[in-house]
Image 1 (cartoon, helix red, strand yellow):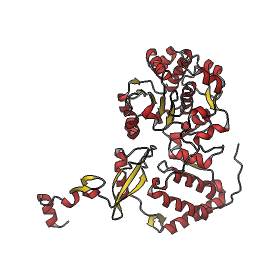
Image 2: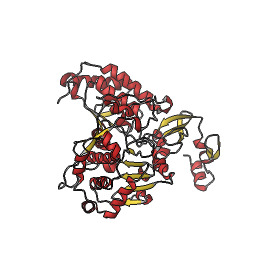
Image 3: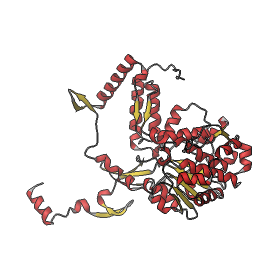
Image 4: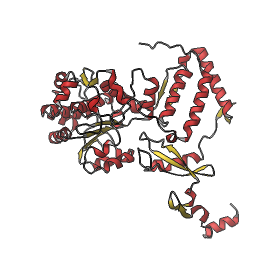
Length: 468
């Protein structure tokens, strides 16, 4: 900055009109001219697992603004503060923009060809000396489904290793195991639209208002709902609740099992459905006997009246929704808590579809979980050609003897619910292709490099027996 520019800036003569001017834009309306774009490119927000569609405004080859995609079914044109600011990371000063290779102890910029050739050479050298399983891959949670799928194929077929994991295992492994115990598949039966039509919404360990504000807007638009929030902390979501359950930490199972017992004792559960489509009901009820209102009250810190009120609200609902996030998945009994939640839904025949007497089950599923399921699936999946197919035409589910460990070691182990036939997976198949316009810009570049590395690193494809 010259002395003249400095003086003009300090004296107020230079008001940076070019940088801070406003004007009319056909897309953004009257807004800062610095954000006006020449064209808009469809992409997907990479922060959380909600999967909001966004449009990046590009001018002179740089992203200058962002807005929600009004045609995207997830967010309907809305973005939270994180999504609105995500594009700033593209031009961040400390962003890695090119490969760096350590030479003579220092990171040196190299070409993409040299970086990939070095990567392939080193991987081959290690695997040739120590075997394919000597290589391990740790991924992130910030990719979309298509990128995870390509990465899964690269790891298993290109590198020939099974040592593939990601940081999202911490977030989703308990939910995946709980779903597979109950339904045989780790695909949540619920949908975002369910929040708009449910008459009772039960959130367990989920601070949707702060962590998933786009979803919060959906159930806030549902004025006919009764919102029940179970959380040890008084979160913003708890402040919005009609019924707030400030239960003690690690007491979710006692609460859920007590509710299940009330549903049975008060004969609010769907007897016909349970008799026709489940097995082991008597064993389930016997395992719930210790979960009296008094015992549950002592464990959870909630009054017996509040627990019973919650059970009656859920049991009398026409279309209830149960949602949870990391408060359940990160708990010491995450898998067992997911099982218990599934028990509630199956007792009431409330486990999917937007119809009366149908509930929704939903956790914070990530693209990682879906892609991992697609790339490592070991059980049959039948694609559902009718995505609006209701639960009335689905095969029945059964109650099994799979263990659900209680929070209180003095209480016996209740049973969980589990599917019985391969046809039950029809719900979880992809029913229609995802438009290419929904892919982020980086998807094509990442998949191109993945395919290149795959063919460069391909080895013996002879199936290897898995260890017992």
